[in-house]
Image 1 (tube, rainbow, N blue to C red):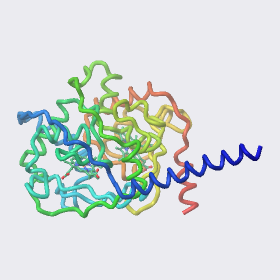
Image 2: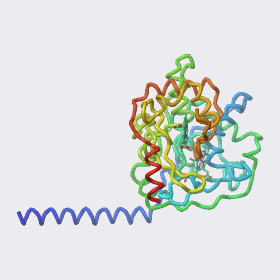
Image 3: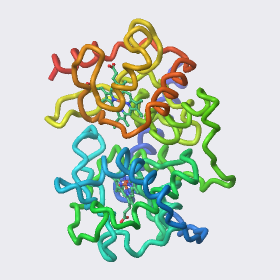
Image 4: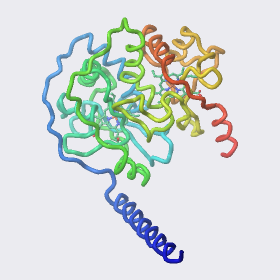
Length: 324
Ligand code: HEC
Ligand code: HEC
């Protein structure tokens, strides 16, 4: 018996030393850098339709994270992220050639938005990757970034550098990896198939699952439905005044989800205007989405088909506030 115990202790010792070694390695290495990617060059034609579409998509994503107080995309403190990730700032993505993205090519931008890897091989671990957005929609975003829209006009103002926590560095050395650049074209499903179209609007276009699943660190951007607690909510974020808030359960569970809470018309109002059926306001970091009624209605039809999850998010918030 004693011998077995000794062997077990020795093994545990090795594992502990190994883990400590790995953690110190990660602390020094930080966010890893990859081989500079081979970028497919292209010139995206700017059409009025793309510009209009790109503006809408930017409002849901880029503006939400990159706009400063003057609505210029010079970057901001990401104070709605849990502090566990460190002190994170988004960056200047205006057309400035030095601190912004004025010198990036269309191909480099698309590559970054899909994979998270810049042309020099550095990796953006926190910024979401738009892995399942259609080619047409992502190209529309690039057209908007190049346009004369006010938020993207060149500004030399720079956000502060991020100080990533050890936790973020550990994630970026283990589970958060660059995504592959898609090999096949990604197209928007036919809108007459409401469920397939709604799945695209929810996962590919709106990336609602990213906030409305269980955990930012347990997501699968290539196959969103394999994310932990897909649409069951409970992901912890922060309100603008720094209080914990948990994303809502959007599955059709009758008790804890939206099964009984929302009709389709009420759901459309909630997503577009952030107002609940009882008139109360849905709080930040949720924000009004510029989508058409048909798009939001299709999300509702899709959510009906998502496996129900029992997860009482209101209860979690009460507990977190009580222990604060
Ligand atoms: C959830 C917040 C978030 C969203 C949404 C977001 N970004 Fe970012 N972005 C960041 C953060 C944070 C960084 C800093 C890099 C990092 O650490 O991940 C960044 C970095 C970047 C960079 C790299 C800039 C540089 O100089 O290296 C580009 C380009 C960029 N974002 C473009 C976009 C575009 C275009 C959109 C909209 C389609 C967008 N981002 C949406 C948070 C976000
Ligand atoms: C940046 C994170 C984020 C994104 C992206 C996001 N949400 Fe939310 N959403 C939240 C949070 C946080 C709440 C909880 C607000 C509260 O409790 O007041 C919420 C609440 C809601 C509610 C209210 C549910 C209820 O219980 O009353 C609906 C409906 C909703 N979101 C739908 C969506 C849809 C559809 C999308 C995608 C188009 C989406 N959300 C994208 C964070 C997000």
